[in-house]
Length: 218
Image (cartoon, rainbow, N blue to C red; front, side, top):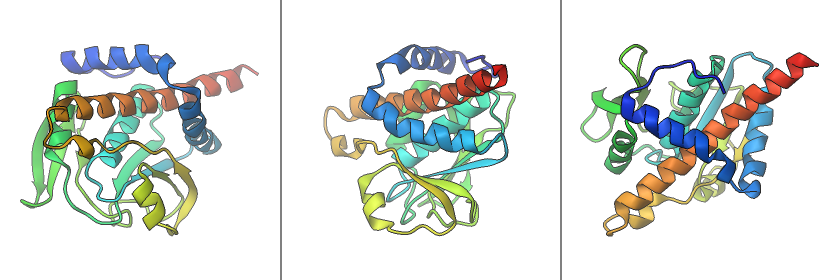
């Protein structure tokens, strides 16, 4: 996939490792991810809205939103717009913020409340940052209709039997790094989940670019 963005040096190194590791994604995982690829392909380069959903909108849904948007931007797929939400609003977990900083992002609080701050997540000094905060999936900042609900955890899948306005419901579940909170493995587990999600969202956008190129050659 041709690069279109400049990244901070540490993030650039991280992103190169992501690109080198997509071949290690298991075929079973690719089956779920390819459903998301097909949804994007079917949008036919018109505005494509993806809402990543987990119960508290505090960890996996934010990571998925961020890396899906980053991969879309970097591949020139500017018609793809990503969002996140939960069945309830809490806050972006500080451990996720720390994991993203270790990956090379620069993150600044940019408003919100003490219990639910808004963060500006920068990948370079040239482009607008990606703004994230915890919210429910039907928050006014999210699209009200014609979007794919991408379910990132089993709890959200079970607690959201019906999500109004969706044009598709796609399951791409991730193990919650929360299980390692307060243990010696906390940092390792958060970094592991962050890298997995980065690789898989890169895979999705790389497949979209490849299929688009193939279709144009026909």
